[in-house]
Length: 331
Image (cartoon, rainbow, N blue to C red):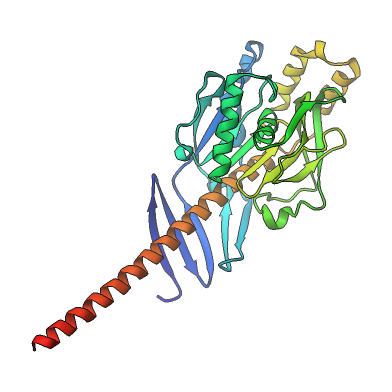
């Protein structure tokens, strides 16, 4: 009927179903979303019982809680897209950046996550320089990317920001970030749903972003780490903490590194692991971020399809008119 029109659009390896009903657009993206994990470290052998780094990230990204939905408003087209994070099926592809393994084509994956690393972003190593160039390519193409800890720092540095060792020492334990008043997250970054007043996650870092990239927007931070989260337009967002770390993994990691910390720092960090973190919610944000960009891609394809269809109709109309004139002339 005129009130219900469903179009199927094929694009690459996935099928996108856009359903229009009274101006409401719902994206049902059934195929798995390919998540590229840009691995920048190996898990210490002493922590093998927790799994490899890629397994830790897979488990974290799959934490997505059921029941949380988010509505994306497309003000330009006066449409809303409703999606549920639990519907975001994912496949994973791992690239070992330290071994010079990076995607040859940006569109190999729907989303890239740059992991943490014991290295510093400012280390003069070839793999780090190559990773920076990859990040700049992703940025130029406005492809979805998330940076975590070292990933947060290397994204900042690659795009013109500055990273340095903090004079405040190690940031360990569960840290709490507060949203910045001018972040406008509800309008520009709708994937941060469900809404929470603060962001709690496990931390383990000495380095910090001390100057954001010119086109980045500060989202959240703390007194200890003022630039704790930032975004670049709609396609990149980063966080300094380690939401992928379970408290058990963090406890064993801190124990392994205890010789690096002051006694009071270590004691506080271990005690803070009893606090509840927002890892599950942050995992939801990643799913929403991924679905938001898949939905945008779907709508762009549908628009191109509509334009192409309209063009074909016009061409056929013109050709029919010309044919009729010619037949009329001979008659």
